[in-house]
Image 1 (cartoon, rainbow, N blue to C red):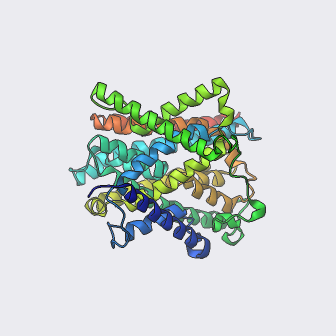
Image 2 (image 1 turned 120 degrees about the vertical axis):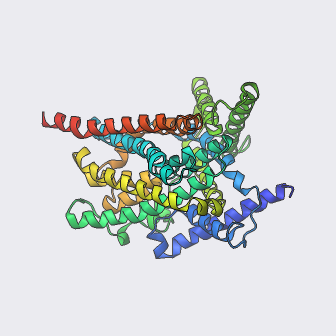
Image 3 (image 1 turned 180 degrees about the vertical axis):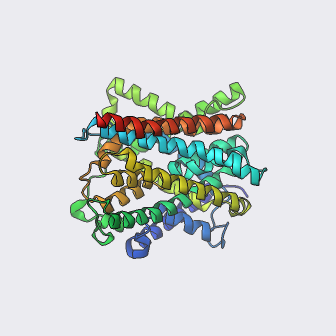
Amino acid sequence: MTFTAWDLFTDLGLAALLLLAGQWLRANLVFVQRLFAPASVIAGLAGLALGPGGFALIPFSTSAAKYPAILILLVFAALPFASRLPASTKSGHRKVLEMGVYSVFCILLQWGLGVAFALTILRWLWPELPEGFGTVLAAGFVGGPGTAAAIGADFAERGWSEAGSLAMSSVTAGLLVSITGGLAWVKWASQKGHTRFVAPFAELPQELRTGLIDPEQRRPLGQETFSPVAIDTLTFHLALIAAMALLGYSANQYAATLLGKSPFPGFCAVFLVAISARQLLSLTGALRYVDPRTTARLCGTATDFLVVFGIASIDLGVLAKYALPLLLLFAFGTLLCWALFLLGARVFRQLWFEKALYTWGWATGVMAIAISLLRTVDPENEGGVLDDFALAYLAIGPLEMVCLVSAPLLISQGHAWTFALVCSALGVGLLAWSVFSLRRQEAK
């Protein structure tokens, strides 16, 4: 069938209706609130069940499965303009170092051991599995929806079209592990006396339970940096993001015609173009007209729709084909994260449970769940965990990008074991250093 502009309009409208329904469920049903599931995930699961791959009650077009690959370009185009250096914190350098090192080896071990587990155990049981199958774990667990979409698009360009559905299924499994496991950890820690600021679910702020913010708690969406007489501020920021996405995509496509293949994944090329543009705007003084909060909200909007279309377009046939190896991979990832969580008691000198729980939240699910879990044990952020993580992320962010770009590149060229061993060795080395070296320094 010929794809028309009205098909796009219909797809976006259906996704919007699902998002509104998902938020209504989150706001009104307590059992949904206890899951901490974002409205976009609820909407995506509903789209999967009711869409063409399920009961066929929602008429998404055949092009809906391609939207995540486009939306991820918008997300990465917005990221350089949506961030700023975190505010100063009272946390000492050692606390930030501990948080950073712990987060980094959690990331590395999930990527490295996930690929190694798939190359050994899973491919021994199912020799036909693709070499990149193990990346599905980190893409969905520690990566999240954006990483899953990026990995799926990158592997699809390299000939493995099933990667997107598998990575998105990993996101869904990771959210389930994050929520159920996190609440179980809270219950266990409160009984063992490991928590200092425990807050029952009923005492959580309304915005964390329902997603609705009371008028007195609301903050401005952003700041106007342009007069509407010339251009609406929201229009400018949307145009900036779309322009960066188009320029990065076009540059990558042009390079592909010269070299025979794309030198970078699409999202990576867009990210590099956006970073370069940010530097240029900074040098010319024009960056002050870019509002990070406005850009962040547009980035969040693209991410919400990405999650809806990403989950709704999961190929259930692919899941059925890989059901058993997926279950084993997710079980291995859950046990790995469980072990890393308990190692937090050896890494952190203070508030080990709060810091390990926060890391559990984002290393298996998404940042929103991590913050929600942290609020259950430290509702006022008295421990400063968020401040420490904000500074530590200056090192964590680039590492995630390196793993995301290098995994498909190396694996598609036959270097899966190289990727797995390097990540695993670096992760184990950092783990050993954090457990033993930091302890010795503390004893001095």
